[in-house]
Amino acid sequence: MEVQPQLVLLQKTLLNIEGMGRQLYPELDLWTTAKPFLERWMSEQVGPRAFLKRARDYLPRATEQLPELPAMAWRLLHDAEQGRLRVQWQSQQLKQIREEIRDSNRRTVASVAGAGLLTGSALFVVLPPAGLAATMVQMVSGIGAGAGLLLLLRAWWR
Image (tube, rainbow, N blue to C red):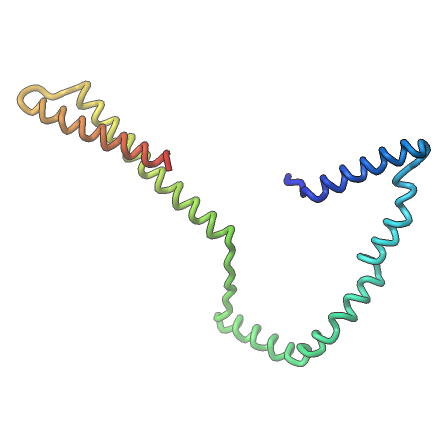
């Protein structure tokens, strides 16, 4: 879970204030002292008065858009009924996830191909065929091993 830096700084500040306050007045209880101020601040920010103030501030914009609401709702329902309703949204995080998945898939394919070339080349080196073709097979095996190694290195060191 991620912790907001502002909250950590606030907690540190409160601890410093409480420590200084207790040096000056040892019976200080910071929470009892701060409770009335916090209650008032919370009621101003979240309480019924704050809700009414925000509603009063938003009311002029809402009344301008209110006459258009039935037509917008009808168009939305009509488009949904006709199958033309599409939700379009984009997210930077989704783009980043897609790029990471694409990169991971490329690495996986390169790794499998590189491992296959290395394994095949190793088999031909360990179990070479007899005759004139043996030298040619070993050369091709060496090239395959080099290509496999390059694919593996390229896949994992980007």
